Length: 285
Image (cartoon, rainbow, N blue to C red; front, top):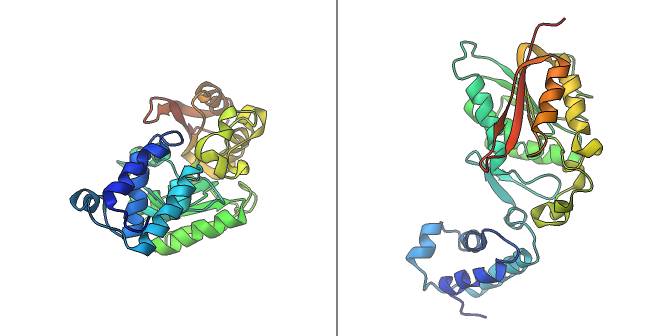
């Protein structure tokens, strides 16, 4: 296939429909990457013929996507909070629902009279959450940690590329390597999937590290640890925000309240599912 056009490439979308809910968009993103053009170009010049080397690259990408490999891994990039992030198979691909965590942090401190705040992102992965907050709060001091050395390297690469001097990336198994200090807000998108969940064998998660996805005790082990230990790393009136599974809201709220957090609530994601729970550190009893 040496003389394939943009329109012919787009027609291949139907071959991806069995493995993708966004088959047409997948093809468009692959084409944009190969042609180094935006999506408007695809609609303006549908009869444009790809060069032989472009055709070869596109077909390689198409076959990888057809085998189920995530678009983000094929292109090596995913946008999160309008930030271009490098991604790979060392950690999770940032998802739109996780932007809710960022939105809630900004909402909590929208009328804040204190300019300089501190934030800790546990299990930072690509650095998506901590870098998104940093982009909105350049006066804050932020720390992102991950227990995976590869994820730490990836997050640092993204931090450096975006030139956020107010973010520090550390190698730490949750709080293990964090010096004694207290933060105004702690956020985390920890592993929360039950190891027996059948969805682990479907879609993009097949290409992501299980260690970033699953947790013992029906997916709650890491959430329980974070709720317990974060208390000692939060200032009075500091906030903890955790992403969790769609069916874990009630148990996570119970964990927050049992630890002493107040103003506990759960917010819903783009699909209407309970996704992020939060609570404030009350007075020490």
